[in-house]
Length: 299
Image (cartoon, rainbow, N blue to C red; front, side):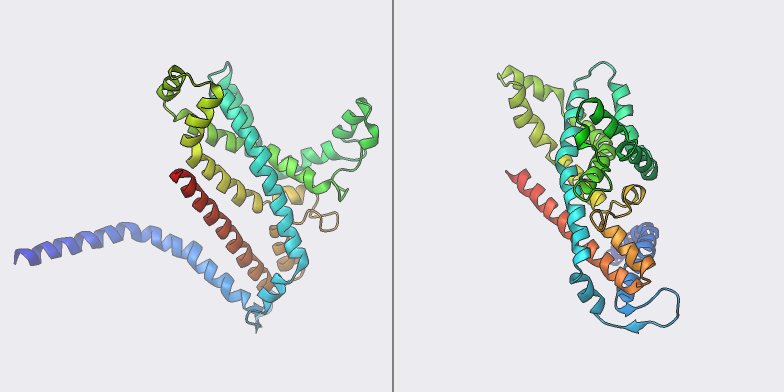
């Protein structure tokens, strides 16, 4: 009898626990699982988004997507900008975080200033940098002329040789601030006693950084890397505000390609297949980064 009563109590507690989780599960299913299912369903059809007719094509949209050179070119463009963000942007964020972590004078002021670019709208940032890069009256060309380097002046965002790198610079300027904040928070969570112990043992600044700071900051580095990849690969507003994907397809990125297929070509099913392929790529990249982080922790 007592065993039966204990089982009933356990069952009741289990049901109560599930009831607490149920609202979150409903929201997750409504705004994530169901949309993903609908996207996959639409990817199997040729559909213009307006007419009620949908023509089943199976995996035809995926075959078209995988064989589309412009799509893979947009992936390479996003990968190039992501590489710039992972290296130069995060290196700058880490350097500034290390400087501010030393309790320099005006540290709070610098935290606010460095975090301003991520707060600004991508469209506003794009308009500002359009003026800087403008080929006729841009600030960059003005500086080059003042330095006697007028021969280097050009329409930076209209030149296929420089457009993608210029967009990457804009993205890095906009994005280093949030990386700075996360890295600074990680640095300030490191106990100061460890630094003091390392100095007593005779470690110099380089040794403290490599043997104390870096090992303890690996989880933070991995978090910043994952957020950098996910955020940069999905870049869109800066592209729209600066180049629109041009000149030609030299600054096209996956999101602009997906929207071009959906809105420009009215191929909703094809756009859904592009979105699913893009999502799988991001998932694989994130899993690789998590796997690497576990290997680094073990070493």
